[in-house]
Length: 137
Image 1: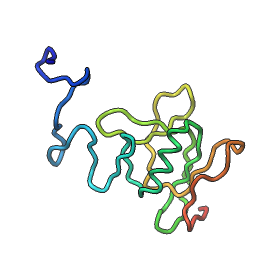
Image 2: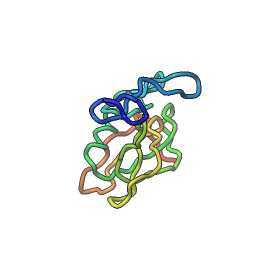
Image 3: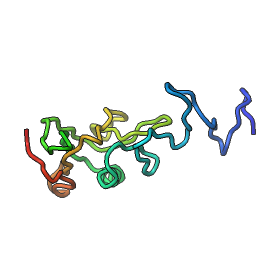
Image 4: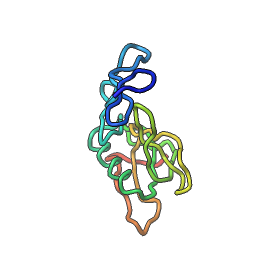
């Protein structure tokens, strides 16, 4: 099947084998930078175990509190992001923090800097993930 501009379509989705980006060509589907991890179509920079936990948080559609900090020392920066996790659009999908149910976008989550994840609502549960050397700023 061909579109009006002559590009091929696969199952109704425009398909290009590669896109030009700074530094060369990159595959459009499943495009990741070396060292990044792709889970269910979402790209993560975090270690695999933490990326799996963040992906489960995204799929649960509950609100979480993400504490950011230095992952080598476990010391918190004092930055806390609260919201439910969504996923950005485009060729490289990253986790984003959606403020509430009426919001459709938000800032990207620095998943490689997460040192603690806990439920925003205490009745849902407590701490989901905590760095082994976690300490408050």
